[in-house]
Amino acid sequence: MDENNGFFEKVYEVTKEVPYGRVTTYGAIAKYLGTGGSARVVGWALNSSRGLSVFIPAHRVVNRNGILSGKKHFGGSLIMKQLLENEGIRVEDDKVVDFEELFWDPRME
Image (cartoon, rainbow, N blue to C red; front, side):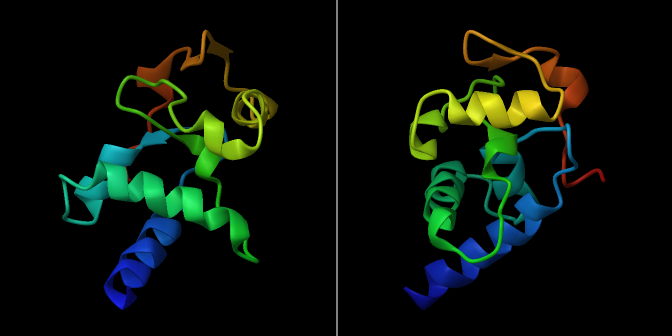
């Protein structure tokens, strides 16, 4: 469990760096951390972040196609969309509009 906690902490640190009004993917975070095949574990980490005392902007992390695949973990199907729209990100049919333009790659920034 300590190994997972260390990985989860790394996921949280990267996620906190995603700029306001931008999005990244589970896979991009995994690749940045040197564990390209662990996108699902990144998702588990972000799902676990709800109980933390510090805010982790998990709503800014979407799947590789820009789809809000983690929306069910936000306590309601519209909360993730609302959080993104509050940052000026348009979402249609549970997908980030202009995903390629808004994508933030932690390996490049």
